[in-house]
Structures are given as C-alpha cells and as structure tokens.
Image (cartoon, rainbow, N blue to C red; front, top):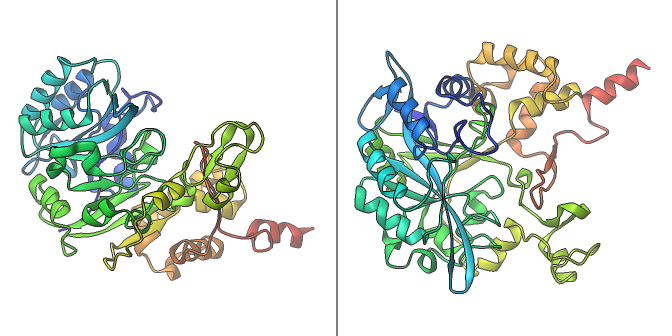
Length: 408
C-alpha cells in the first residue's frame, strides 16, 4: 500500500509550539496535507501520552488511530535533546525515538524520569551522553527505532558545526550498530548528505519537525509497504527502493541554516565567502554560524556516490498562492484560494506532486506549480536561524506586477 508519512512533529506541550496542536488539529492538517501516517511527537510528556491513551486505540500492529476512525494512522514518536560534554566539547544532540506500543513508551518514560526532568517540556533535555540514551531505549525494546534528528543543523545535531561530531561512530561508539537512518532536516537534502560517508551508508528520512498543524508535511516520506510499524521500520532499515519510494523535501536553500552567516548583522555568506573572512562576521568580527552547506563540504571525503536516493522538492502551496496573488501568505485571499484548491483536489501533496496541470484553472498558479516541480526558482538562502526567501517568478515575470502595469 502506498502512503505518505511524517514522523517528527511536536504537540502543544513543546516550547515554541502552537497551543492549538492537539490530536484533533494534527489529524485535521495531516488530512489536508495528504499525510497518511503521522508521528505523535512528544510521547515523553505525561499529559500528552495521557491524551494519546484517552483518544487513540491500536489500529494495525504498532500503529494507532482515533477510536472508530481508522482513516489516519499515528505512530508513537518523540524528540529528545541530550546536552553533555564529551572530548572536552559541549555536545547538543537531538534524536527522534520511535516505539511500537504504549507499554514500551511508559517504560521508556519511567527510566528517563529517573534521569532527568521529562515533565516540563514535550522535547525534554537530558544531561546524558546520547550513546547512553540509545542504550536505555534499546534495553527497553529492540523494536524501538532511534534516528539522529536534522542531522546537520549547527546547534543541535549529530554533525552540527557548533556541537556535533564528525561521524556516527565518534558519537555512538559501540552503539552505532543501532543507527540505521539520519533525518535530513530542512536545510539539507539527500544529495548533500550523500557527500558524507555516513550519509551514503545509512538511510535518509525527512520529516517536518512541525511546531503547528499547518507545518505538517513540510517534509515527508513515501512508502509502499504493509501499513504497520514493523513494515515501516524494516523498509527504512533495508533501504529497499521498492518499499521506501522517495522523500519529499523542502528546498534546502529555504531552510534556516543553509548558508553561513550572522543574523544580527544581516550577513549571509556561502562557504567560499566565509573563508575570505576567516569565518568571522565582516561587520562586527564575531564568529559566523557555520551552515549546513559548509559543514557538508568539511565532512566530504571526496568519494562520489553512484547511489541515487529519489526525492522530490516542494514549496508549500500557500507560499505559491501568496506569490501569485502578490499578498501575504496569511491573508484571507490566500486562504480562500488554498481552500478552493484543496476542495477540488483533496490534498496539498496531490496538488504539488500528482495532478495534471491542465486541471488547474488559474494560469498563474498553474505556471507556478510547474516551476516548483521543475526547480525553476530563485532562492535567497537561509542563514543563522533566518529562513530563505523563495521567488518563483522574477521581477519581470511576476504576474501580479505585470497585471498592475497593464492596469495603469
């Protein structure tokens, strides 16, 4: 069965998330986006797991659904942050943990609760070596799955320029045998991660890391397997292209850490430009935040991979409509056009990936979707926590400005 899965999201109990992010709202947006299997996120939080137990029921082996409504499947997941010192350097590593049952989640929470505070935030911070966290999780159940999150983000990832490692083995040592996958993150795509030795060896998965319902599906995974926990995990572990079909990716330039830079001074630099300034801000002299593109080149061992990991890049539909209309993405007119398209074509992924463009009435939106599919975009890359800015049309091509000129 072919389906789309987004495993890494957050609930209302995580910091900096929408307070509307309850199970019902997650389900609402998952269906609009076209996601068939959605991570619960935050299963370590006592109130969130309580809500999960009250509202969901087992629905297929290792998956869950709303009682009486099997249309959307949930998979138990949670992001955990480990902050600790190793080899005289402070490490800040985020991971996504998958679990096949409520009972296993409760045992994980019991053990982690004895180590640190897992009640104050949906993404708890633990002061233990991430290798020790992996040992704990695997000791609870070998059926759990453990993935380094947004693997190249500067501040909180396994390969991050600020606090990460140079390899999976350096990080996890003898526990490396339990690591089968890496999460790409918004600022990288599989073609970049394939330049890293571990990126060629492991499977690359992509998830939204959504902090609100509307951000679900920014990135996702497309499978063709039986709809159960073990089939999904085995498809990831095996890298079988007949089961794990492709990932859906943000354009990595649009991610918040693609280029090097210093946001306070408005400085954005590619790796070559950073070298000219000795990786210091040319305005204030402070160290630049080294982005994902630069970090990939540092870890690149010069071996080109012949393996092709299929992936498709998208721009969110509301951003496409916003540019075509020449107004803000949160405006009522954008929402009206978005709702109209969803009602006509069922889901955002169906519109962005599948439908014939001949079915789209608005010629500007039709042309914009065509350009997104073919990669004909201009993107000012993101840097130091600042999202990149996508332009589908150039100034001369912008349909809104052309129509305004004709009007006057």
